Image 1 (cartoon, rainbow, N blue to C red):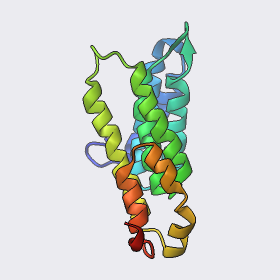
Image 2 (image 1 turned 135 degrees about the horizontal axis):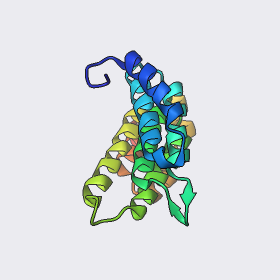
Image 3 (image 1 turned 90 degrees about the vertical axis):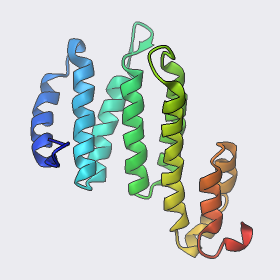
Image 4 (image 1 turned 60 degrees about the vertical axis):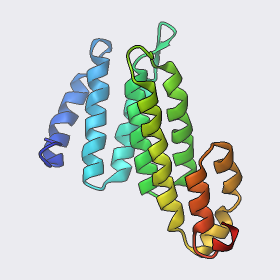
Length: 174
């Protein structure tokens, strides 16, 4: 239903399915259902609701069984949804925390099973999301956020750092 642009119908069906899939033997399906709900809420522009669904997916996927993460790849997908939500909500600090976690989670993926370089490239695109958010901040906010440049630099986030310096009132620092 998400592919045919019917997010409300998807939410109804996925929500019912998710409650039935909260058992150990169907944990992957439960995480997928929560991710589907997050995607539906994102399509509807309801980012707080999408954030909650993604948090549920992260919590479940990154729980530990027998000393290993249950579903690190799906946890990574959920964290990426959280990056979208936090940026859409204008929440920079949580965005950076989820962004850092997404890069960390790649280390838990089996390189024989996943195309790690492609995954890292997709994660890096989220920096562009942050850059778009930062370039549009008001001049007074840009001045307040200027200390963030050091943290962006330490993360190798050149685009976001440049965008913050380019924000209104800060173009002299480029």
